Length: 340
Ligand code: AFP
Image (cartoon, rainbow, N blue to C red; front, side, top):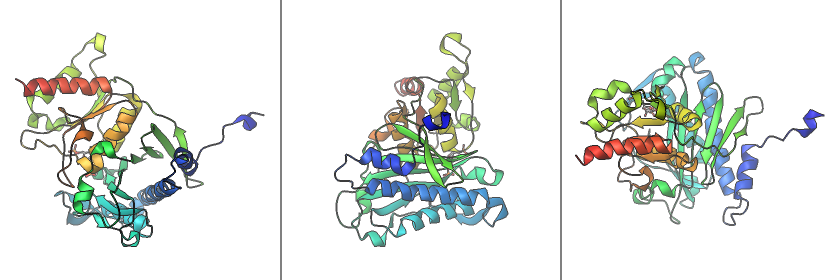
């Protein structure tokens, strides 16, 4: 009889319809957009699974707008998202790590309500070693009719995101996202090709025991960051220190661990590169929005990431993100340095 009492699995489509059923302006549009994003994630996951057997490994020999080497799979993932949104009218423009300028979708004819910001493939240095990878997306509503100008796209503060999330291509394929009502996790069922809800309303622990940072950069940091790391590594049974260090080289994978177990991820600014490495619009802001929905914080060390007014599409920003108490502690160290 047990099987009769099992709760039916909730698909991504049913979930998004249920979430937006009371939104009179929506009429299924958000669900349709999420299904297109999910399709992008599924196609990328498919290509990653057989990358070693196909022509997709290695570099294209090109350098992107960030000055970084473009891997074949970076280019492929970007292409997949462009194709997925090419023939629809909801999204007017895509901004991607791999493209210098916003990509305008002709078929939307300037009438699309949304702009999507993407890191199509996060953690590219993991590609050739079969380690985890991710994709990050952030969705903003556009002001009105007509093709959006760069200004329209830029004026978007992180706190104004309509939805944000990521795919994690690991031992299973996960889609974790928020549309401003908590954080939901879906797992891809490879046999049916559907994402099903696997964790509802994820909450990040208030404090954790893990930090995630590239410690190879320690010599390049300001003393506030160095002192904070020293604090995390000091033994103190009262506060559960020392913390453990975990770092994969893929922001999404490291953040997923932080979201589930607590603790924090950091990519600090450096003395010669005060803005650090991560990009605001399609790395820091979406993950900060999501983590805040789970009860955590996303900070530059001195202010909330999602209160920043962006000034460039590919702007970088220092980042301390994760459990509330851990991020607040990082801010104490950084702020005490800036006042001494
Ligand atoms: P991309 O693969 O999208 O360029 O992002 C990689 C990344 O921004 C992030 O995923 C990692 O956490 C970080 O870089 C790793 O950088 P380091 O190799 O400098 O630690």
